[in-house]
Each structure stands twice: as structure tokens, then as C-alpha cells.
Length: 132
Image 1 (cartoon, rainbow, N blue to C red):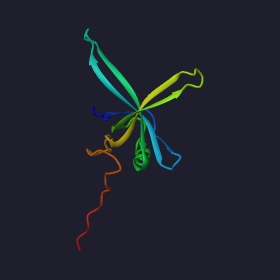
Image 2: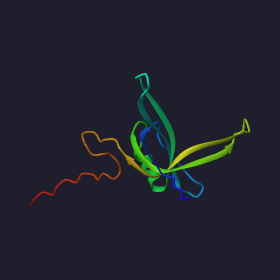
Image 3: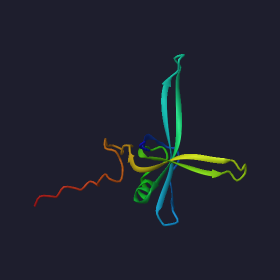
Image 4: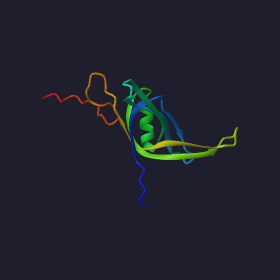
């Protein structure tokens, strides 16, 4: 049987990203994304279900995310799910947590006065050369 682990989410950051460095020196950026699903209940009432997912981004993309992302900004994140397991020190019970390890992060907010998405890939405007 084949294995496949791929996730794509769109949501807003719930907190500013935090940058730290792994023991080997690789940068790691962590943030949390909230994604909501709106639906109508059987009785016709509108409802919303929000899911919060912790995201880890590594290496150069981690530095870019730390530089440009802020709480409230909308992002698309593609990556894979990882599960952390540990024993709770207080209760001695096993604990688990799913988080998303990002392979690609796309910034979805708009620059003020522009229809183009903001982000580090957007080149600075170069003034045209004056004719001689």
C-alpha cells in the first residue's frame, strides 16, 4: 500500500511568528494558523468551525516567513503532517500533537494600493531610464 502525506491549508496567523535555531544551526520559524469552515445546521442556523494548526518552517523559508508574516495575515501553507509524542511530566500520561511541516508558504495579503499579493518575491519598482 502506498503512503501519502500532503496538506494544503489557507488561514490567518493567530500570533506573530517565532524564529529559533535547531542544534545544527538551521533556522526554524513557528506560527499558528486558524482556518474556518462555515456551514448551515439542519435547523437553518449558520455556524462556524475553526481549526488551529501549528506550523514549522525550516531554513531560508523560515527566515523569510519571520521577516514578512505578522499576526492576522493570510497565508496558504503546503506541507506534511508530523506527530510529536511525549509523556506529560505532571500526569505521566502519553501526549501527542499534530503539526504541519511546511514545504511552501504563499503570502495572500494585498499591498496597500495594489492588486498584487505582497511578499518577498515582489520586486521593487525600478524607475524608467530617462531618454538622453
